[in-house]
Image (cartoon, rainbow, N blue to C red; front, side, top):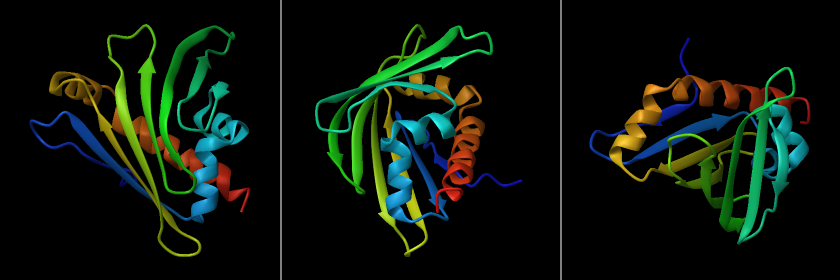
Length: 155
């Protein structure tokens, strides 16, 4: 089955460009990234903090079935324009990956469809390539599929 989330990873570059079109109005797609209860549903993680404003910070925790925290992610929001863009840092604690920079652009296609474009900039080409060796592409596609499913119930 074809992945709906596309990843453009050009040779010799230290960034990725990820695109996904959703059968969701722009307003609803944007809410999936800024309303903690919705983020928790589609990401399967706990939102500890989500300050959607310039210089705001965010933190998520993912736990196993026994309730042990297995991953903490956090960052700072540098730019926040509702229903247009979010620029933020992204750090996975206790992993070998350094902080990355993410540019999320939200675009209205029609009244009922929208597009998300994410550019992720890594510290080095080696860091980006290491991320791509993980099941990253499968994971982000699954997360976006879940986002679509969760938001279909809110349409």
